[in-house]
Every structure is written in C-alpha cells, then in structure tokens.
Image 1 (cartoon, rainbow, N blue to C red):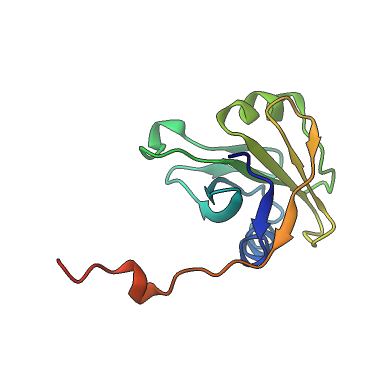
Image 2 (image 1 turned 60 degrees about the vertical axis):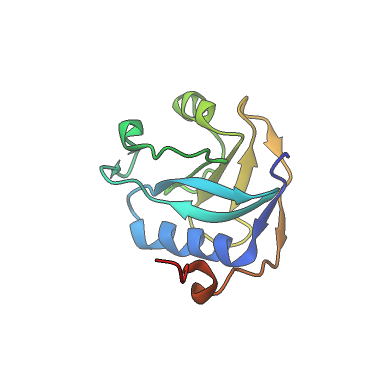
Length: 135
C-alpha cells in the first residue's frame, strides 16, 4: 500500500528534531502503519554536519521501512544529487528545510519527484496496549 499520509504528531516530532539538530542536518528512517507514516527511527552511528547526514545502513534493523527523512539547514527543501542516491532506500523521502515549520517540508518518491502527503490525525496505541501480559 503506497504511503500517502503522515501522522500529525509524527510530523511535529520530525520538525522538533530538525530544530534541535540545527545547524546540523537531522536524518532518520520512517516507518508506516499501512499508508500512514507513524514512526521515526534514528539509527545508532548516524553522523551529521551542517552539510550532510550519514545514516549507517549496516545498523539497519531487520525491518521494512517506508523511507527517509532529513533536514536541510539551508532552508532549501529540494533533493541534491546525493539525496537522490540516498532516496533509493525507501518509498517516500521527506526533506525539511529551515525554519522547520509545517510549510517548510516536501516529500519525494525514489526518483526525486515531488509527491503529496496528507497530514492526518492518528490514534497511537497506548503503552499498555503494546505490552504483552504473557511474558
């Protein structure tokens, strides 16, 4: 199922993470529940500067991820040639530009073509629902 939406709370987390990383880039993987991006996965060993972010794919968990997210402190929320190579790891790729507001991000497919992503409300499971009483 193609990813076409992002949970509002997840987008807010992404924007805050980008702000906290500024002036360095922020980068992480995206996880989806059906067609909705719900989680951000920050991998150990990720390194960032004010011009790039490097996610160590050898730390990639044994899971399917929906795509990637990273910031551009310059404010330009369009993919560079290096971004297009990085985009090959997922279905959807989000670039967030400074000042990291709801109107300063764009989503792209693997080819770097812009795609529309709808911001939606999402009911995250309660922590208690995630725990299994059988342990």
